[in-house]
Image (tube, rainbow, N blue to C red; front, side, top):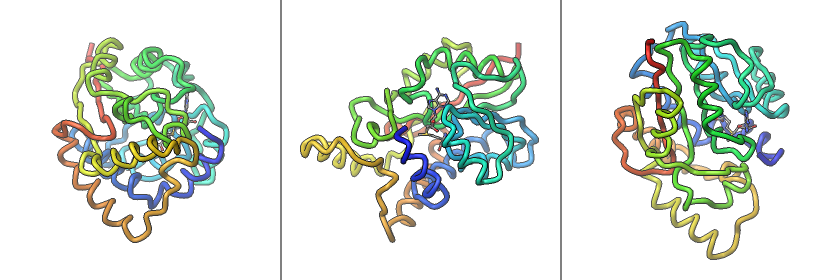
Length: 248
Ligand SMILES: C[S@@+](CC[C@H](N)C(=O)[O-])C[C@H]1O[C@@H](n2cnc3c(N)ncnc32)[C@H](O)[C@@H]1O
């Protein structure tokens, strides 16, 4: 990501509608299998500036985070996180079968991830039998826009692609859904306008202050939570997928 994007992410991730809505969606998805207080060993692969680690993830157990970028880890420390390592998703520095849950939110899509299959194999390796991986990724490569340039997105995915990659890594696919469907038409218009006006350079969408609309957009995205958790959304700006490592 462009270095300034870590600062933006740290500044907005507690209150920005996208993060708040995605947190609701993630909680609803986790609620399919886990209750708060489950005592899980959780790995946040590509933890960024620590928003998820320092808030809802820790309700489910002990969270360890790693990220490729030193800047990201410094912001995690400001949030009080201590179980942190600098590493890449393609070479995860933990022993086999040492986590119950691996989450990786908007990371495999990044330019610095040289191989999705290598990363998924690493997630599989560090999970206990019966453990789960939960992925969130941007959807549809044809939707690429200024935001993707700013945060170094190499690829946007379809549900089918992610399902195939999870199966190839050995996972049983337990959940597949698009998310951020209700706001899809607005985003589509914005991306098309950027292309027509050749505005492909600039900060990410996170830098856009939507002012009083923040609450409304949070509510709209949050309303999708039960639908995503049941795998019901047929399109959207995001892919949510979960896979389980077979019991053995
Ligand atoms: C869009 S941010 C998402 C951060 C966080 N997961 C979240 O949901 O807010 C992508 C993160 O992936 C990290 N990243 C990129 N390539 C990586 C790699 N090969 N290994 C680990 N982290 C990586 C970046 O440094 C950045 O923090």
